[in-house]
Length: 284
Image (tube, rainbow, N blue to C red; front, side, top):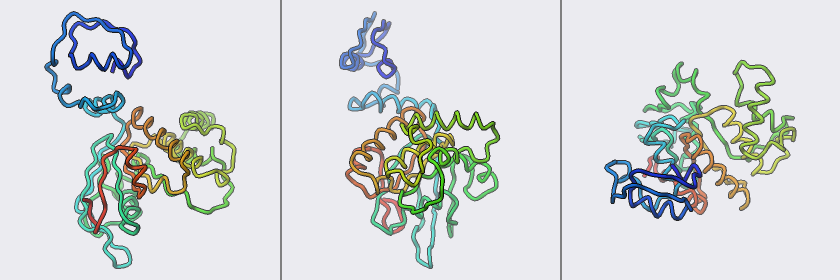
């Protein structure tokens, strides 16, 4: 935590010898009264020496429950589309603040899985829960704002809407003055580096710009669960790099629960998230 917060000089009463090389690599000047091999703390044993400072910080936040994400659980979920079984007794559990990628061949049911979590597809059997609510119930409908969806940017539509208006959709249904809405939109767009696009036509934007705007909408919405459907499909190399940076910042700052479906294995490797393959209607 000392390194992550940018502290450059500190005095410590009791220090673990494992912390010393971490301080030295980060250029932290430190002094101490006593050094021990290990501090009698279970958390220290759970942190791997190969973890980056950022990953260790996120791990500690999750362990302390200091994340904004909600737990997600799918139990024996089966879905049929046009009489074809797409998901077959699928089970999935995500803890609050966890990030996961699901990959699989085209037609494996990745998008159907996300739509099921959004309540857009009703399972033949099984249960989907987000937080304390079962998807499809009245209680979930009242709290569905906590779940946000970033779709593939291949929709062709010339409806006249600005990037700022797309971001403000995240506040749809919220009763607040126009000036307050403008404030939240500006903050969200500045955080994702797209405030300069505020008045641009959304449909004139590049794939990377649209992804930034979509992420800003999620931030504006204060979503606790984010669902991404093939987010790199229409991005160039630079756009993929920008999205990678944005996702890392989002994970370390808000730590929402994120489920992403993608077939871009090279990009998935860079994310270094937990991942599962969707095959035969099940996760393996």
